[in-house]
Image (cartoon, rainbow, N blue to C red):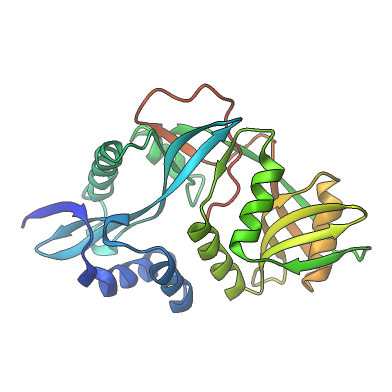
Length: 273
């Protein structure tokens, strides 16, 4: 049997969707949002065997920013191998191909967020190392003065860039934020601006099956726990689990394709999880 590694083809979309569902269990609407918003054949790399897709990885262009400088990075997402083909090294083959392919496109680093802590060792064996960290906090829902407003991806991007301008961070383009918004809205959330007591905060949030507000990103100049509690109450949740900049919880891993940029480890919050 012959193996072929390379960019996907337009005709692969049904097989890619089926593999995505098998690997991650997402609903059709969430999977469809990716292919409607972000898919181009070259943005999904595959291993095929006798013309059948056996493994896939998606990549999205992002930028590590610090001051007036920027470094192109590719964010790897939805790394998956067909269940019947696991244990044969196909994922490692695909990761190696992705490194060469994306280096040829001018990217300086590959970023990814392991879906489970146990996968960190696997990615480390393929050249990745811990790079970014976040803070995780929990808060009970509480009412408070303020207003919650859903915003578009372009509005969120403009506010996000302004709020993060004083630190190293990973910038997400509008299409990535549009996809994140579409996924969050499938679960009762979205991209939000919080107007509270003379300041503006930003949040990307959704509701989980237990009725908890999962805040994938919370950017605020005030006390994060207070804004997380306000957001949970506004979304009708009983509590919130929020991700904020800083902290020591390992998050994204990186594989360098060129010398690392001369800047502190950046903040990465939007991970499409």
